[in-house]
Length: 445
Image (cartoon, helix red, strand yellow):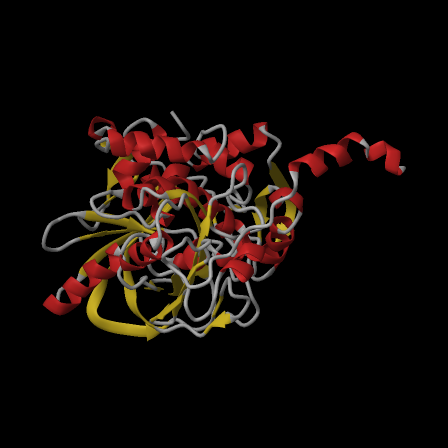
């Protein structure tokens, strides 16, 4: 079984030499972020960080835990991220492998219960000088559909307003957003629970754009090879990881909103923020010696880039089911998740490149990507010379699709019957190549 909680993961990173402990006091206002940013951009993604002494709080902070391919593989207990594709193929091929039921167990996340909720005691991080305040950046947000009872666990940023309230920024179209829309339309309060920590596999699952009918909790159990242990909340009908470090329970009133203010984004610029629903906190519980996990958002490479590479490997299997011509998918670090995707296909017929592009745009986890490029898969590295081939094999406007501010590009080599101009690739003379190879030293090299 993979790691049951954050501390087991930290111990694993320590044993691998992937965890650096900072002993001196640090400030959660900008200093933690500056240190983490430098480690994120160090060769190989630097180290995971554990800050033992944090100004203004008795609790330590952990950052950059998922910030390299090695640490991502360790989080999911796989030899390499590439094996995630095979595991997903197994899941899709054999329904008997799917979704493990949860197990209700002792709530270690409730070892300490605040008599009066006070969020000011926790070391929430402010990352950039122009941000409006501190944000929770690695949350597990639990909601439930008021009509069907189906649960959702998503990763939505949370703005701390004061000791008893916070704002939640939904991703439009996400499970949490749909639940909130139903409550808002019905004029009813919406219960919400925010958990920090717990099994790394659930953090990964919450960050994935999983399609229906996948459930994040049971999917994390599949990744962990064991049912997740969950605990019932104290003030609402929701369940959270029993081994979470911190749990914030509360509700959203149907119409109340507040401006979240500026947030330092992965674009390298501030997101000005928007009006967000306000969580009225009813209960805060935590492990007695809690460790607060956070991620820093900013220009790549950052921790979210490596979470995206894990998503790339896991979601590839779903994309192959959607379009069997797909050989591989690459999400460049600069795109952060699906901002930009390169899709390599084995093209067998005229128009197949365009057909794959249109299918991915119509539905699936890549449909909202800003830039989507379809290429011919090359032997060995399917994406070798991808930029060069994109610039030289595509013709504008013939091969470009612009829709709702998103760009799609069919950069496959065109076959007879799909273009007036068919490019003939350069090929060397095999006899001359063999001759030059044989005489290479004769040339003085």
